Length: 271
Image (cartoon, rainbow, N blue to C red; front, side):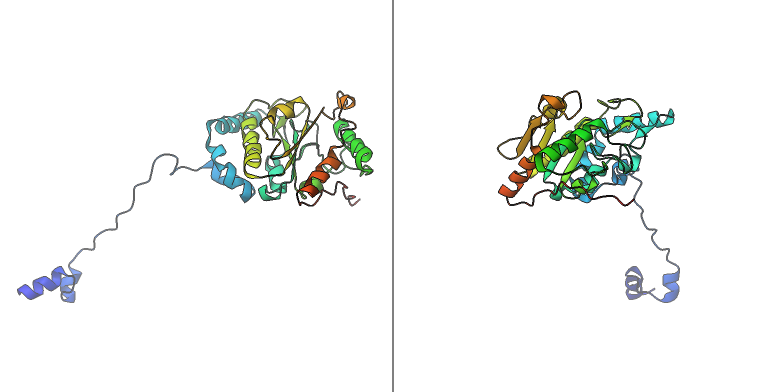
């Protein structure tokens, strides 16, 4: 082989019979990465409105959320009934995207009776009898704005207008009020409220009862409207919930800050 031929072969430009004799260099494949990056990330599978997911994704990778997930798994494995259904845990956030929120009504935990809870605080599914607290909410609404009770307790129409109906705890065991408190939901819903209080202005936060008022104690009343009263439960409604006029106060505040008021009338449901 002449020096010229040798150079051509080294450059990969030799005669065909020479090239055939060369073995191609095998492609180098990256080794699998061990750890969180390579493994299934449960957080990435969370079904949540994008406006909330971008702000809350870090919460799903925190230890408290892993503990909550394991607690719920064990409860279901033990045959316990959990309300609401799994695909409704985040219904409040899905009904009311972050940028659409105008009002936050903060509840405590879901209703624990059959067919009641569906992910929106104080709301019940169509056709379900009204719980006493919701009856009192409608009574105050009539006293405040003259709106007649709608004959059902499905509050989705409020949520779609920007009223975030958020419980502090998003699940409950059937028949056991408060059974999922202090299991991990509270830090998550704290993160929701902090994001709104920090990034938004001129929201109305409605804190009915001592629990809600304690949870929302950090909200700056110079930046947002903070409305407080006793809880609408029959045990406390007569101590200041009735007559609080929160519904009209919310709309006055929204109008004063250039926002459309909430139409608190609920549409009649198809029979």
